Amino acid sequence: MSVSGELRKEASEVEDNNLVRPRLVQEPARERCLVSGVNPMDPSAPGGPPRPAFEIFRPVPNVAPGRSAKPPKRDGKVTTSSPAEKAAETPDTASEPLADILADQDQAGAAASGSATLKIPMQAQITLTQEMQTGHRDIQTVALEILQSNFRWPGYLKIEPPGSEQAQLFPVGAEKACAVLQHRGINFGTLILEGTAKSTRITDQLQQSAAWLTAMLLLNRNFKNLRRLADTDELSGAYNRRYFMENVPHLLDRARRDRFCVTILLFDIDDFKQYNDQFGHAAGDAIIREVIRLLRHCTRNRDMVARVGGDEFAVVFWDEGGPRQPDSQHPRTVLNIAQRFRKAVAEHPWNADGGPISGKLSISGGLATFPWDAQNLTDLLAVADQELMRAKSIGKNAIVLAGPAGSRDIDEAKSPPFEGN
Image (tube, rainbow, N blue to C red):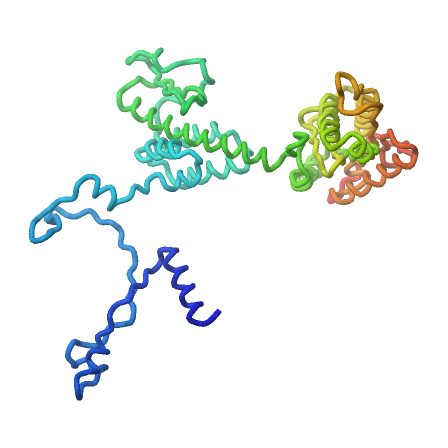
């Protein structure tokens, strides 16, 4: 690119960013060159000093005119702008930040109208948005804390689920006020202020708070949907490889700090490619979905189930807060759960009711436990994969626990070999 091209590009970028706006102006020095005996660069020359090739104009904030300000003149007459012209001259930017976040323009308008008079600190709203992104805290609780600290009402706020209480049930003199958290048929419940006498001022403030809170709950709903799409495998509904690789290391850190065990099961479907080639990829997809369904019947909600490859899966078992059952041992109990799952897959009638395939199906897997077998995720996966290969070598349809023939002696009374202690 030529130098002039680069300059044009720079100027275009600057203009797009609304930082400066170059404007070409007429150069009077060229005209002064026609006057005989006059130096065009002389400040005393007719017409004054030469003007620059361009001038820089920066945006000036709109300032409300004082009482002495007069309307603009047009053709010598004092005129005023019509409402339509004023709307065109002064664009409404109050809802632009929320419009960029919310997909629905009406949601943005509701949030803007609610938060315009609430005067909620920007830092509090930023904190709330960050909590939405991480998903570590309940958003309703955080939002109620912000409202309570901002208004300092003598009563206390709470949110009742949809259908439990309605605003019209409270008379004017009641010691509670409420507003429904609803937008476009989506009902989040009822915002209730208890312990203070109902008044017009409190009712207005509560309605504004409800408008703001509804917008935040809608935004949190969108964040949850985005997290679900980003973290889960579309076909099986299990977590995807990215979520697994990012979150298991944090779980191992907690296990090291709080001294509990974590076991990883790495398994795949035996001869899966053969089923795909014989019955088609639609049958292969149906197999994956059914295997995950059977797996969920054998695991708890806290156990992490992830699809880490085409037909490869990983399950993370952990027992923070005590064993699964009295007198159970980790990882022996996990091995029993894995064997129960393997048996369920092998005995499942895959051809019943027009099933995807005819015949039987089996899985093979390996188990590795933190902290006995490894101290980090990479090494745990390597050990579990090694045991998976051993299960394949002994005839498939097997689950192998790391250790000599899976018969390692584990004494729960002894502290496991946690590093860093």
